[in-house]
Length: 329
Image: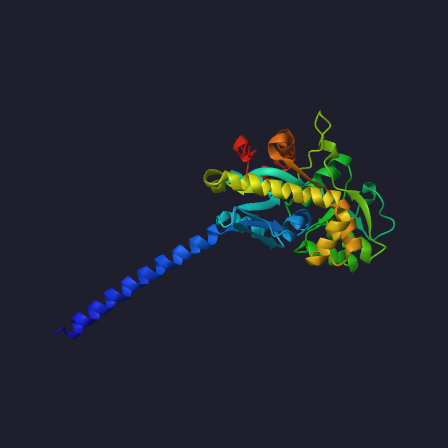
């Protein structure tokens, strides 16, 4: 007969064995679940607008469900990428370059959304950029795309004594502050611009924030504001998925721009915007145009050089290598 000590030893070994079995089973289920999905992380704003047709169609690729992870802040998406948790992502192009330079291997497939930043004011006397002199302008996020491009613009135009206010912690909070007259001038992105213009007739566009001052010798737009990115592991393991996702996303972008009324209905249906009139106006201001990254490589690097010249650390201390651009399917 077994002694008490021997029984306890046996039970302990059995517990360890069962723990190992449960752990292996959990990992197996986790891997199976992950392999059944294709995840795309998207920031709120124009990027969600560009995906709306794809979302509504409940697209699946090779039997895998496409999962859309919508976040209010690009930094939340950056965190998911750093943890290698998503297959595809949308980020501001300068932020994407910064991550790539820090060893987070996501490549840029395309620019789907171009310039969508607008300088708005609720003051009737503020009509042009020159009227910003001796005034305070609110911007969400120091060192962001809006911040750097705005500062470069006023430097180029020679507008002095413009004071930048970073008090507001999010684009929505900033838009509410403008509507409630807690600030009088702000740089805001779509679709919040259309919402504000509809809500308050005193709010107007002073200027669209653009890269006109930096057009290259081909006279082509270089405001590649947004990067559509793919995880390098997917490039190695399943390039066919990349091709099919790109085809579906390109079709979604084209649908939104070519059928704004129908797309507006979808935006309301999915709770992205409150009503179709606002949604349709927003689409027109969202600058959606899916262009493959390899076709605009010069424009991408010209755009990133603006950030590098202003503050090299904003893109990770250097221009990213050519491997940053996804070349072939």
